[in-house]
Length: 197
Image 1 (cartoon, rainbow, N blue to C red):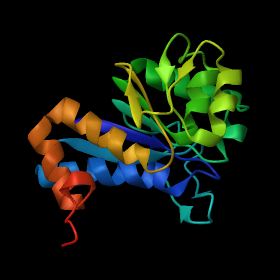
Image 2: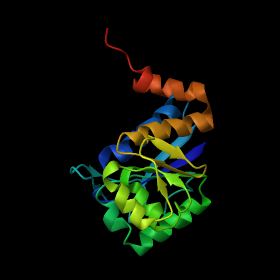
Image 3: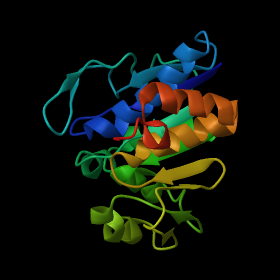
């Protein structure tokens, strides 16, 4: 069982975190709840408001969450503010340090960029923040032709829906092709979605 911790903050992009949440929780449900435990974390555990106004109450705060094996950093306009918060950046750095994987979605790439975690790596992000990420991490190579990029421990994905693709890739990597395929079929996503005839 791997613990998947998804970081939430004000002005987070909704699908950036809801997509990965769906993938990992569906995989777990299809495997007798033995694959992943998925939960959300915000700085103080209080409610956050997504970019389009959906209010979400996280499961934990920085002070009381379980160990995180897979850290998901979604994007959204709020990342501009998050990278200025010392406590947030220290928490991300410490948490990713003990995690097996840190995966970013969309403009969530700003966060590891500021921490220097993308230096020397190939990464991807949302098309509208490529220049911004390059300014924050001049030594990163951005390849926007890819939906996601796996650097082993650090993984990045492109805009919004690409977080689903990256999450399915992580499922495949950790649980095998069959498990990932079953999750896609259940979600009716990608090639597993029914075709119009």
